[in-house]
Length: 346
Image (cartoon, rainbow, N blue to C red; front, side, top):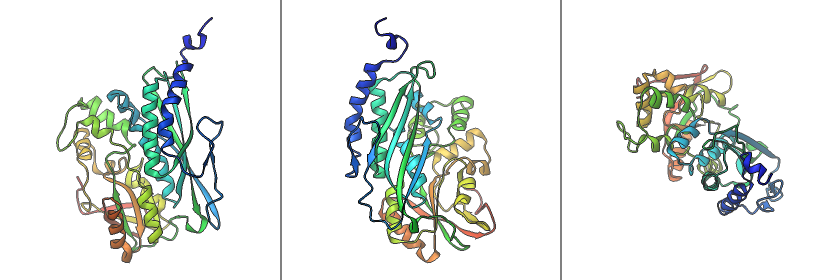
């Protein structure tokens, strides 16, 4: 039977075209340490030029979750790849690691070349923002597993840090200052609740602007996750950072304690930073309690760093010079967990 595989739902020629289309985007991410080209059985990266006393590789893997469903609804696929990179590289930079390379995995019902190209275009943009090379990936066409419009996206990154410079959080003490770096919006967590609250129960339209939003709802929800790699690496060159937390699933309440040693808690000053209108809209439409919001979403802060009080103002200034919106959001205290002062945030 001619074209048997195509009749089974797998179009090999479309797969070849997708690879051909993505090459120009992948090429823009290359670093001098990358060996070989796109299409090999494995990606190669030369570590011999790194003059570190005790080099440690740090790895991370993650996906985009159900934010993908918003991309399907809006038929917009050129930024979701930034989210995939951000979720991985932000996780390893909090340990002081410089991301070196990235690999992606796309599983889809139908390998439509233009759509795959747009996904990889976003991944490449994320890699450029993080300074890492896209050295490999897999696009798996899986008819019957996914519908023709659906795909899943995941990534994997490896970074490097000198062992003595790993940021562990173990030296954080009561009285250290917590500095927050602004998020771009919801980032990539909590989207199952977002869809239920705003689209299913609230019946809001992705094409309309609501409340204090400056963009149509669909554009607001698809804002890419902020990548903090370059400002954090610059900060680590000039100041001692005692701990960092990437504010992802679980919000403040789950993620800040991940960087704190036993016996140390965090006290957050509500009102110290501006919380984007999308969070107010979510709370209002979903009738969600404030504590629940802080236990699910980043609430306008995508990254938290712990520094000594005497360094805090200089750290904020440096981060702002790097283009970040940063401010002091609290401090560490004796105790455990996260507490909030200052009344209502939203």
